[in-house]
Image (cartoon, rainbow, N blue to C red; front, top):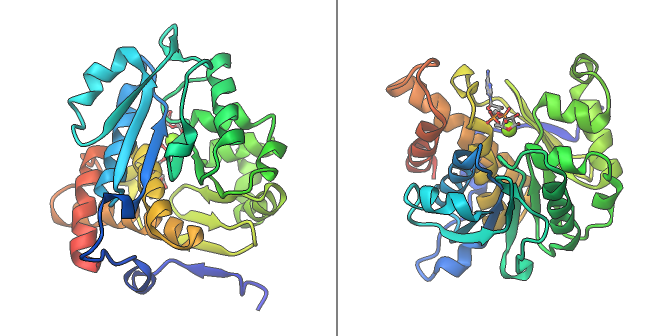
Length: 290
Ligand code: APR
Ligand code: MG
């Protein structure tokens, strides 16, 4: 009874709640997403999130990143559109112009680094975007000192930290967080009115209303740079397709972990699984469970 608000993400939930694609649908039916991030140092991470979002069913996805890397990454994902943003020393600059109202959901933070000017841009988007915003990776670093700003947002905010990032947001040591991850994330989600996706061997999903779920899917093949970026892309896509944000996030974690599990069972191993394989593996999950 004490844990009535908690449940485990199951295959049946996914099969039951995955939104159907109507024969009368068009790309506008599945959302227009924006991913803002990347830098000279980490252009690939952005591509993975964008590809994962498209592969999971998003209608349109735009990659917003520094001008100088667009030419390189555009050939990596020809289905996306690109929004060149201003740059300073290889990182996103705060005078970047983005028409935030054009998008149904926005993911920020991936591969963007920790430069001050980039942080100003992150906080501006979080403050002004009138749609669901997913904040990941370095984006979390940029908001850590102004979390109360999140309480003021009306549309949903989703933060997707790994334990190191969650501990940073809470300003506590990682071992402390890991003693009571359900409680820490629950308190945080309620306090700042955000959805929290605490990633790890098991991933804990918490809604601002206190509902919690744990996804058991996934394996050590995911312990490799880029896996988190793929998850963020899937979450962005599901946020735009699902009626319920919480359900959408649970389904995104199911897709991500189950893709990795199916790939390891059929053709890969914990050693060689790459984040881009996981993106391909999304097809297996949909073909098997949708
Ligand atoms: N079992 C199951 N799932 C796992 C395992 C495991 N052993 N190891 C990792 N995962 C999953 C996590 O649940 C999560 O979904 O892989 C993903 C890893 O995400 P991140 O920790 O964000 O890792 P990464 O993709 O490398 O992030 C890239 O973002 O957070 C920053 O500092 C990080 O620069 C790095 C960048
Ligand atoms: Mg990450």
